[in-house]
Image (cartoon, rainbow, N blue to C red; front, top):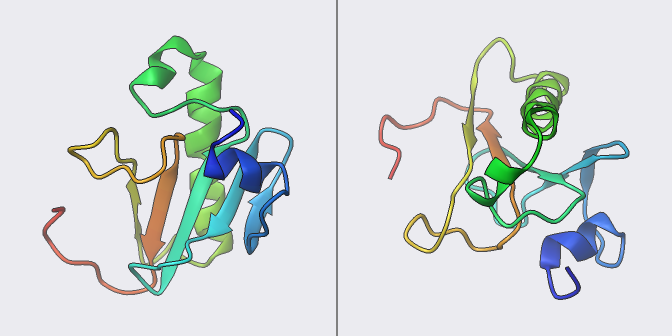
Length: 114
């Protein structure tokens, strides 16, 4: 999608601090971190959110989650734990309409999810 911020990041048109990249997925550090470790994992293919992804293959979604787990491990979060979050739509405060998963960790996170 031509006006999508994350599509531009995936295409290399906007620089990012990469944590991981392959042919299908990009992981990069959030510019406004909410935890000591805060990385976004995005598919390079534009899909607006997890609800829109229901039309994608199971392999597409599984690949995104497997990559998030791999990146969390590479960032040293596997033993202490981490949180995965994917906001969907305006009420969830999804700020960029491109499917993405936040990896949050590096400290004990709060009990609340709001």
